[in-house]
Amino acid sequence: MSCSLWSVLVLLASLLGLATTSPAAAEAQPFRVLALYHGTWDAAHISFVREANAWFPRAGAENGFTYTATTDWNVLADGRAEGYDVVVFLDDAPASPGQRAGFERYMRGGGAWLGFHVAAFTTQSRDWSWYHDEFLGSGDFRSNTWGPTTARLRVEDHAHPSTAHLPAGFTSSVSEWYSWSNDLRDNPDIDILASVDPSSFPLGTDPDQTWYDGYYPLVWTNSRYRMLYANFGHNAMNYATGTTLSSTFASATQNRWLLDGLKWLGGVTARPPADASPAEPLSRSARHTAPATPPPIGVDG
Ligand SMILES: [Zn+2]
Image (cartoon, rainbow, N blue to C red; front, side, top):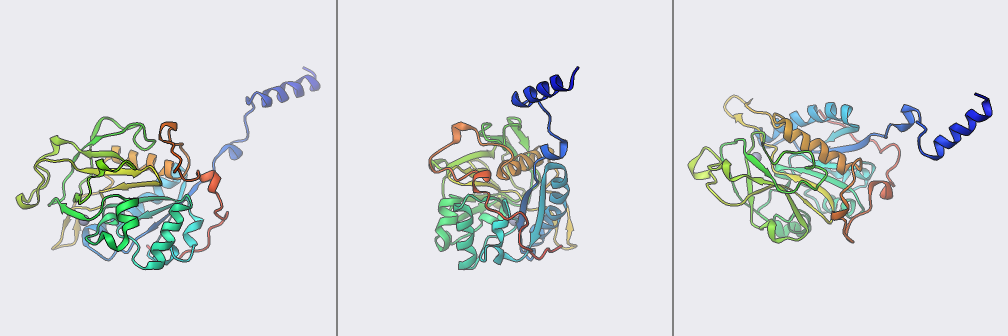
């Protein structure tokens, strides 16, 4: 084959999109996850934070994201969080007006968020109504199960990228479970992804803190934002000895949801067209004003 014919074939192949780029060029940039936590209360949540700060970096290496964890919540206030594609709240929510305003700005600007367990906890939702009533939709904490147990989860919506590969139901990791003052089913912005399957009842081991029936959403998203909330994030503990008795990452199916959810938050997988709405924030690529190298953030254990 002559050189010119070969050139023509290569040109044709590239025009048809058949040419393979080099593996390095084809490989997507890892997206950047920033986790915020306090790690001070209580032992069950601290145990989860320690697990998360070990599990996510390993998962990130295999799933195309970097993971930075810090106790400096002021990264939300001063704009340093803008350098990250996904912000995670492991065991709390921002407290100061500056942190709260910065987080709202980050989300309204097309940022992405994953929250666990205590991230939604409040008994004073009016103190930050945008976050608790609009963004999360849950309002106030109403009740919890005790002691921590697994739950059988029913997947409510398989059309979302985080649940597309999940079975109809699965057993979660052990957690304490929360219920809320607002009925999320009444909120048109909220897409409940998983709820307690009735086969879980009674849920809890203390008869006074057990759910016997009812509807309990545990995982959801708000279609106006790129966000996911998961109610798990509380390990079973022997409080007397400080020994961890369960792992939040013990359910392979739940881990699959976490990773598929993170990939969606990080802009790797697209939201299905059916979910598109005028309020849809800009996609990661469209908003991608994040600097190539995020500003330095003090990294903690
Ligand atoms: Zn808890």
